[in-house]
Image 1: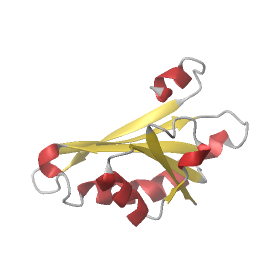
Image 2: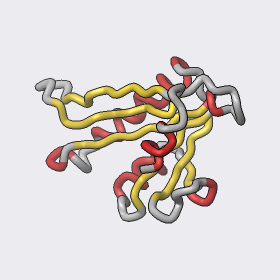
Image 3: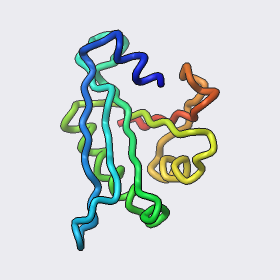
Image 4: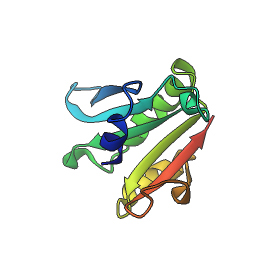
Length: 125
């Protein structure tokens, strides 16, 4: 909801999506996103972006999202010249929180507007 709300006010935000596929069969099992990419030079917004990921139910809890996000982190910092990645999860999505914490994201929910519905995590370069 927040993402759609913010996009109404700015045409300067971009995003990239990648399909997550099994190496052996090339079957698509999920999607990886980076969004809130911007060139706006205000409060270092151009140096941060949000990430997201979703894995099909039958492929969850097998390390695929961890592997995908682990590959995205250095790519995002280098290719998009970012200093901070932000991820949010629904409050009861414990598997996603576990994944982010394992990859050294730090919970920062109190800094965000929608912290009552989601938990927010940040990773600094």
